Image (cartoon, rainbow, N blue to C red; front, side, top):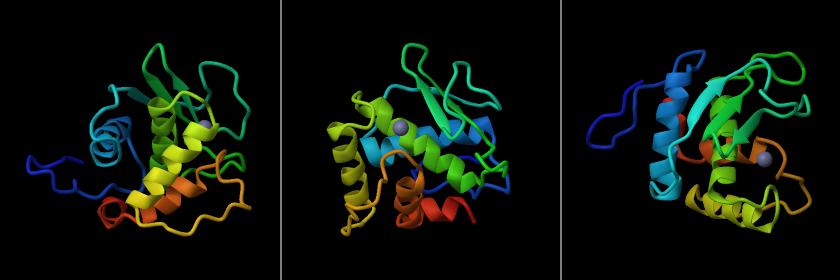
Length: 150
Ligand SMILES: [Zn+2]
């Protein structure tokens, strides 16, 4: 995957995703969703997190080390699709942007991304803040992002 100099979308990602591609997605998401204001983080694909986390957790952020770890296997033992890996990355990037875990600032930041993606309807009854579903939806609603995962 490579991004052209004029900012047009990179080539599509294959059936699996590499750390290099996730790193390039970090830059792309940073530009598109955060105006390039996030500090660069390294992205690592790991079978086990460096620190103990609940098994259902898809990603983990190490702020001091500026590192994001993402697990490629779901709780049910399935390989995560590139799209899901990207959604976990975007979730972790919201954590980079705001530091109140899944609190009010986090929710407001997710809503900002939703508006950018053209999502008006927000189902308040659905607990969207822990999982990646909301971020999958944000990517699905962004034509430029969808094109990456053909
Ligand atoms: Zn989170």
